[in-house]
Image (tube, rainbow, N blue to C red; front, side, top):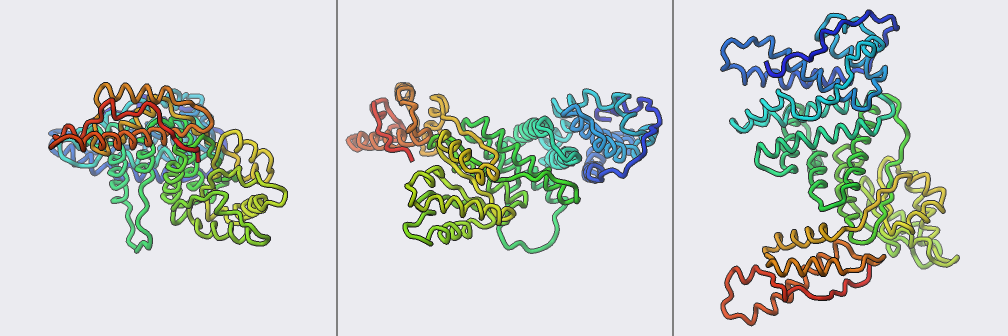
Length: 490
């Protein structure tokens, strides 16, 4: 009815001679959940259409699941045996024919999954029908589709022990495109669309039981908040890759499948004000939502909070910080400073204690070490214990002028201010002239510039008798300082 059968479902396949294996049930489980959730909704939508065969609607939903699974398997172009055995087990019984009697070699020779990844390029006919129904009836059918389709995507990604980056990238493209369509249909931002999608999926699977902590936010909602951050495109991509890979590893672990041992501890490199703390907070929420840590809180500390001045006090001090961050994320800012003291300094003792604790508590805490790029590279490379436990670095680049101007504009919107054309041009000139040296404050530059402009505007407005609302809101060119001391970098 909507989109019809996948064109190659009827492609003849030779009978496989390869010994059949017991496939991983993850894909079959995800396909069954997809069909069970959507088939009755599609039937309800079509109830008023004369002459529609309900049995054909059931096939439509199964074909949609088939197309999704085929597309995600084809995302990396590998079509491995575990993926194809799972595909045959999931759809052979549903469609019968030669597929049910096939082996992976038969599927490959028939090119059954070749170029299937293109199915993910645009929302499908079925997805568009559900989006239209949502707009008309105020329902959340597309959100339910989104939730169940992503389950198929992650089931596919978990079939191989090593998840290819192209698979994770395909999932992110699919997630973003469909969330944008849902957001546009509902007239909300992506974060609200992600929340709605997660709620739609939870309504189908919610179990009874008390929860001691406030409920964790859905991963997609946190990722949508990440997307709202200005700039940081490369950082966002890396965080999404970390989140998706973690989700795949957890799925494999739940089913008792081999999981590549991989440290979750990270290095954040970048100048001050590049959003490292904000991203760390969001990553803590993501880890909690995925079940990696129970509490998902962020504890931020620096050298002063870890290093004591007397023998025997540093290790207990570090341990106490780890206790505070237990079941959450610990962000150690300016971590390179731990090894910058003299030979009698206790910073190296702090490093040794950190190395021991990240190993002892690897299942209870995630540690992020942050600081200037060159210094962090030197710190990790000079310490074998850190190098093996912090293998991944995410670099936070400096903001360019357009991004800093966007941050300034955001501050204005949040504070209820508006800049005149002349004032905004002066803000841009100020930002262009700010040296991008090692002490460059990035987002703090825009924040401090906004706060100084507001203070100067206030001094100007108090001299105006009975100012209008427009005058109270307006930032004029004279409110923008020519120079601003950003203060020392932190």
